[in-house]
Amino acid sequence: MKLFDGGRAPNPRRVRVFLAEKGIEVPLVPVDMGAMGHRQEPVSSRNPLRRLPVLELDDGTIITESVAICRYFEELHPEPQLFGQGALGKAKVEMWQRRMEFNLLSCVAQAFRHIHPAMKEWEIPQVPEWGEANKVKAVEFLSLLDTELANREFAAGEAYSIADITGMIAIDFMKPARIKVPDECANVLRWYSAVSSRPSASA
Image (tube, rainbow, N blue to C red):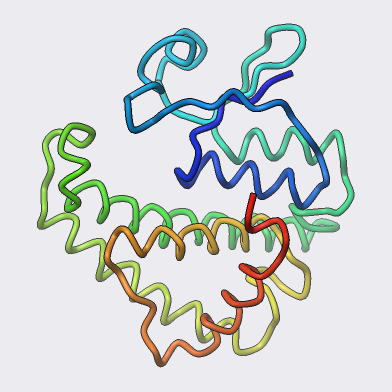
């Protein structure tokens, strides 16, 4: 088994943080995304979308998409449960994982890809207006999240989950996207400080 990894890029990092929370070690194959390594061999033949991360199992089976890879390891190593417990717990984690992904991480990524000069060869065409629009969307979601976090410790309830991993990484990604968490989002800042202080956050 080996994991083709893209360093500080958000999706590869999501898997590494997840594995660190589980205490699972998987051999990493570093890929230099800055040099477009993810668009070349050995990634391109394993993932036709030419994206990272890519997990290759011992028998050659390929799994791509960060959450799919995390779900695979959740089934193999159920503890600690990072996709929720019971029908309701799992539904709440799924709900907040999707909210974090589509309303925060995706918006931050669109802002970064469509505005940052370094992304000119990655995002063709760059549409700066779309990037700016997504900055607004991300900040709007943070206000909603702040209201929710007033009543609980973590994104989906009282237990840390993959939704917290996705949210933390989205906020980390806000720095290169030049988006700031509003000062009035005190609950988001409290939550972010807590999740980013976990040992797994440095994975």
